[in-house]
Image (cartoon, rainbow, N blue to C red; front, side):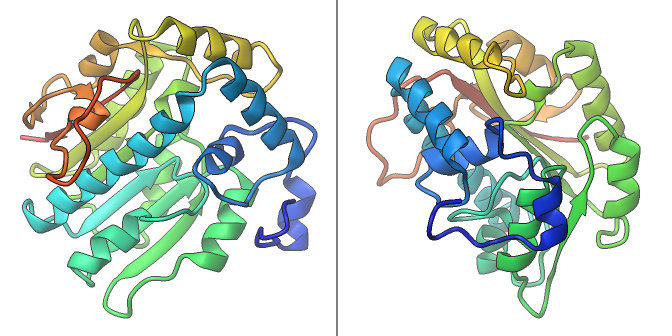
Length: 271
């Protein structure tokens, strides 16, 4: 691992495959983190050689999530979050943003990468008033996720479901929709769904880079059209401005003029 990485314990190390690149570790590398291996850096550098804009996408995605969480806590009054496919800890993690505003907020992180879980448990600590838990589970098993989340969250109360750059790992669109329906179906009226994912039909250079990555032997990430991403919110109350390129979703007044990039997302309320 790189010099400044937090070393996971022996059990986690035995499960970590360092012979192939992993999307969470590459994403961490693009965000400027240190929790990755040489194979991830090589894959990340190969990707940016084709499409340097992926770094902007990674950072814009993180900023979108921060603005979503800020709205949910400060304006919608949400005090529970289920963050599925959380990725490696970096700046402005879900619980950090939420608990800065409301220290009593409770968060459950879900991931199936042992490196993510090892680092999350070591580095992410809740306020005394709230709670933070880490669940090892797969997005393909929503029932397992819900059972584990119920140990920390009261799922009879409004909860924000966060699916940030995870649904691309579910190749079949109907299966992805079914996962959303199962997770959101267990949450009450007044809950929210936040989704952002890489989008197809915006930037052909990005698409070539992603297609090449998917053919490299790494776990593939499938880009979807904006219409497909929008369909994930069917039956929900989409907040303005709807599903848009993430820099255009309620940008901060201090942000540079937003530009359209191939990463789309939205936030919606369950009626």
